[in-house]
Structures are given as C-alpha cells and as structure tokens.
Image (cartoon, rainbow, N blue to C red; front, side, top):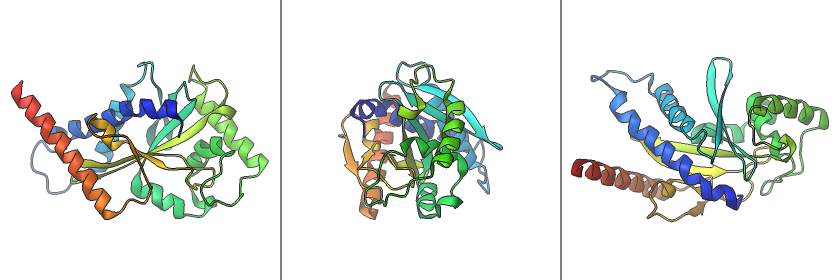
Length: 232
C-alpha cells in the first residue's frame, strides 16, 4: 500500500462512519415490518458523505453509472490512486468467480493494476487487446480527474466494508492484481475513525474474533459520540 495514500485514508474512514451515523435517524420514520430498501439507502448515505470529500485537496470524487446503478470513483492525486467501494460479501464472491464471470466494469477498473502480481498468483494477465479495451474504457471514466497524469501510471485500491446490526464493523483498503489476487496486506481503516485506535494491517479473511473486536470498537466510538452530543 502506498504510504502517501495510507495517511489520507482517515478521511474516507470518517466519511463512512458519518454515513452510518446519518443512516440511523433516516432508517425508519415509523416502525416498518420489512426493510427491503435499507441496502440501497446505505449506499446513498455512503456516496453522499464521500462526495463531500470532493474539493478537499485530498480527493477528487466523480459519479458514474453502470445501467441503473450509480457509484463513485475517488482519485487521490499524490499517489495517483483510483479508489472504489465494495461490500465485503460481494468482494469475496467475485474473488471466487471465474475471471470471465466477473462484472466488466470491475475488470475495467482493476486493469490499471495489470503490472502488479498478487500473493501466490500465477502469471495470468489479460491479453494486450483486452487490456487496451479496458484501459480505453477507464480513460473515458477518469478523463474528468484534473490531477490524473496518466491512466497507465495510476493504481487502484478497493475499500471493502461490512456492517453488523447497522454498525460499521469492517473497513479495509485492499489492493488486488488484475486477476483479483490480493497484493500485500490489507490496511484496517476502521481504527482510523478514532485517533486512539492505531493503524494496523489485517488479512482480508478476518476471523470471527476480529469481527467481534471491530464491532466492539465501532460500538465504543458511537457511545463516545453520543455522550459528547449529550454534553453539548
């Protein structure tokens, strides 16, 4: 993971936590029997909070879409890194899928990591024609990033997240090569929401005990914020 980017990840972590804080009062104006729209509402809250990072001298943020689905691309200029968000369950399922069964827009995005080799990954990179096609698509997507120097020199990072009982419990920055093999260690971003929790690295396959620990940290942060608001 780029050291310059690591120092700027707290901005994303805080925006994600704010999105979950914003979600609670919006979740239900009255007690609902079902919550089918909650997953979409989470994404809308997350994207709204991340969009507020645009113009912060840290990230450029652009909205794009595939079909009816709108999502955000973030770009960090100093490290020349493209950042996208993905749910943890989705990330794991795509890693297990055949290469040709993975969504094309994700293959376009991670094509910029084609020169990287993941841990234990075979040398199975896409052919030149496929890479050229995906690179051209990404060039169009990223042409509005004023600080991007060259799409061929850019890198991509996934921010992988998960929640438990409507609380953010997993948030990691993960680099994968063009075949979705992980490159190096994941950066645990959840601790960055609270400066008292140190930056650390964790494997992408966290154990149950790690999930419990992260959930406890998220709950502690929320309780401290609630107490602080009551004191105002």
